[in-house]
Length: 568
Image 1 (cartoon, rainbow, N blue to C red):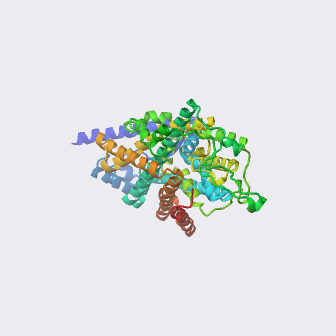
Image 2: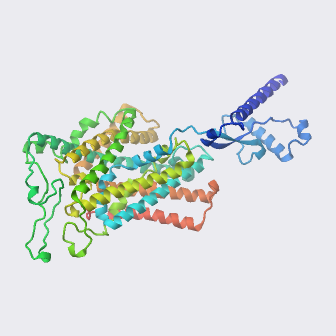
Image 3: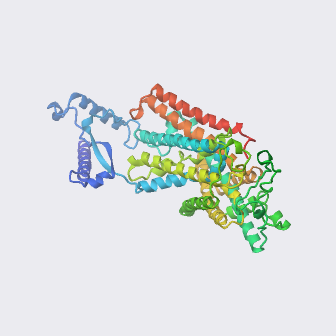
């Protein structure tokens, strides 16, 4: 027994000494400064030698009585439980400071700030971009731009709170995502709310993508079919306007006799534009709302059943190319059309007239809530940051770039659109002729981009839902097929009966923005302040400010119901 204990003590001493040597050797004073620059400071427990109660060193006063008691209590705890079980592990704050050591641990992430900012920007720059001119129309020009910036500020702050909440919680327990933090603070209910909000945003994105794919595929095939038959009627538009590439799907008759004394003038026909001469057989087979959503199944069914999404993540760069093309597309069209905007109340019946404020502004706040929604994925994006201390700065810069991008597309297209502002659709490409070459290229690019992103949304939804319900991301092929059929079925129903992406984005964005985007980050922050985590303190100004933010999110969600039937 005595020999066994002696050998065990020797092994422990050698192990402790080797650990100390490795620490001191790896982080010696002559270590290169540039390596420390890419490191983070970490406090670890310095390996020590456990002394016997009757050890002479203790009697000589090398260790004071308090530390002696701590050492023996620590030793006692370790004897009660295996090292692999940390239940009885002495908390860090109890261990005396002279038994800890601070070392610099190299950061394993290889992602620099440019990549982080670009990834955040690319994640937020989704289909909401196509709805920005429509959202500004519903809110009014000036109020629309102001609300876009305000919503960007609110969502940027809550995203910052998500990042900081995870950083603070990591100091106490290991967490991977913000939903883990919610569970730590508020239990299972908060985790379920976070999961439901995430799944709702994914399902909303799938529905919008299916509607857009149906729209893009319809116009692309129609362009090819009628161009091959030279069947576009190019004369109808020239009789009404010089802008041969603009179209108004919901045109109205305008009476300007009160201003000029002239008779009523038809500014545009029921459908202004270069529309194809009807082909009854083709029109029956190829209908945007009745048949095309079903034809999409042929393309999507093989893609949504992959076990791994690797091939689709590699092609996700198409998103950035498509967005950049939309920037160029908007600039070219606005340069060709010029500025067509007039705020004068005297000219309110003219096509260029624009309101600065409209009571349907919740349409914009709902769309922008989803447009800026990245709270459920920002941690995954910033996790591999080379310098984690730059995460907050990168989040701020990413939100600024996204806000500028949305304001640019929305305001430029809206102010330059040459026909009546009431014609602007929730998909700006619907205001461009089917036979327009630039629009044709945009539709093809966006179609293939969404074709790659849609399976990713299915995969993430499947991963989160099946793992939570069945404890496995692939319980069986039957489970996966049933879930895919249900999801695609929901998408088809919306594409047929409610193909209005602006309304869908508004409701989904308002709900997710309220629950996951604003409410949970604010509540987690207040809870952390209440518990004093991370050195935070709870004060009345903090309570008031964050309660106001939660109220704004709730009013945004309720506002979506108040504008039903008032938007077009």
